[in-house]
Length: 372
Image (tube, rainbow, N blue to C red; front, side):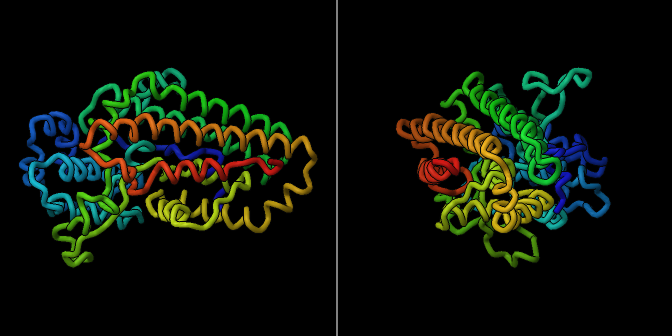
């Protein structure tokens, strides 16, 4: 089990910001994407791209960069074009698919591209801070789109502290001070989460940000899926993949496993398990291993601890409950309430293709301390 990943969190240690010269045409389109979408030129520009790129020599960070720009261009094409044909042209599809094979996750925009690999420091001489990061790639651009992603990045950055503390507690020193550090960290995460409304307006999010991150599974616009033109492995058959969603972040499921929070078997749990397919492989592998540990060994570790430790664990779980409660509140304000006065995109499913209000509420209710 690669526990070292817990110490570093899920923000990549190295992020690539520009691909080799052979990718200059897609890099140029990615850079100009907001203006291309505003001028309704996405179809024409995509069809001018080179049909297939060689990805065999790309490094890990370069593959992530390639996945990011092909995912953004692919989604821009799907949701920014004038026709309703559910097909991704070979100019994107073939290379996108080759990248996905290398990274072992589907060719669609996922959280790893949308947030984890999509930021940089504004001033690298200064420490990390929410006001000292910028988003690298946009669809339409603007403060609201940037801030929405920046909040996620800041949460991921802080999460390495709680994950590292819990790693030390359960797999190393086992000192109560580790739990105290974890409690401080989850409180900081909740503070960051509370800042979402500062610069991300619900109306702008619903109408300008959200439409571009939908996938093509359980989406009424793509009932049969989307054809990836020229991808031999798909044999011309439509593919159905989930859209980008925070459920593809590894933080909360990792915390559930470490803290002993369990969810009952039903379609919503199946959905969460499916989301692992969209995570970076090393995150997915660690999460699966932690689940196995939580089910077999965690109780032995916890039973040996005193009441102070167990109370601290319960306090941390209560803060995770606060986090989930805020997420549910945002889902109501940013999506459900907006949908009541705007029928431009569906309130029935989230961007990942789920009945999101029901899902969020269920997992909120299941996040309870062991003593409750």
